[in-house]
Amino acid sequence: MTDPNDPLRVIPTDAPPIGACRKTGDSLPPLTLMGEHDLCPGCGEPLALRQILDAIDAMDMAQRAIGTIGIGCYTALTSLMDIDLIQALHGRAPSVATGAKRMRPETLVFTLQGDGDMVNEGLQEVIHTAARGENVTCILLNNGVFGETGGHMTATTVLGQRTKNSIEGRDAGEHGFPILIGDLLARLEGTAYCARASVHDAKGVARTRRFLDRAFESQMKGQGFSFVEILTMCPTGWFLPTAEGPDYLDQELGAIHEVGELKKDGVLIES
Image 1 (cartoon, rainbow, N blue to C red):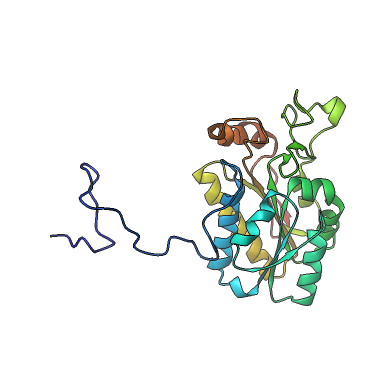
Image 2 (cartoon, rainbow, N blue to C red):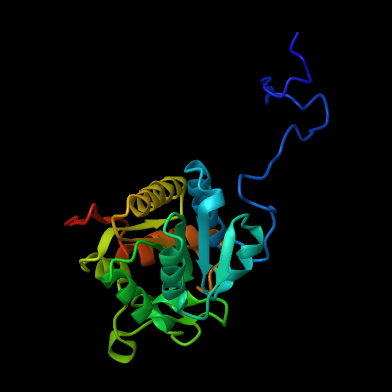
């Protein structure tokens, strides 16, 4: 007879349970201090954060990791992160990360920024950091809106996308075209690794983790600047029901900000 106290036992699902469920171990993933957050339902940023923390843990770099955090909804996630963090001013995280890495070259230094923070407020910061070939990893959480300040348009908002100040959809004649920041950074000589991923489905989450692993490995090899852009859901800022967020991300943002590796080992990957 199967031991009911064995946590590895197979539990049949073709009949009602014979006993109450019980916790058999720690349910929190490594480097995560708590399992709750106050971001909107359907937000993709916690999924991205999980992959970042898991990648750091897998490299056994928790005691030598320094995250530089920008300003956005994701700033609230810092209370979940069991690693050393530095809070930067709006858009300035790449410069702060540069200073941290130059002072502590043995550490794994990364930024965590949104598209409003990186591509609007601090575009010059990330471009010059990449151009200098600073040995840091910049991570962009891109949902195409200024989520924290009300959901208005950013420099990465795609044409036709509705935001608080583009209710009829972003128009090229009135608002200009979106900046494909990953493609831009990949062209700079100082960039060693550059990729764009998404967390709209399980395959995308797995790909996100793979790209983060490669970016961090590139940094620890001293190859230069590395960059991972992660497309994340924001159904609140997109005026959508929560359940429609993943498909909208895939079909609208993903159609313009195409996922995949853009540069590896300093060599551009042509599409």
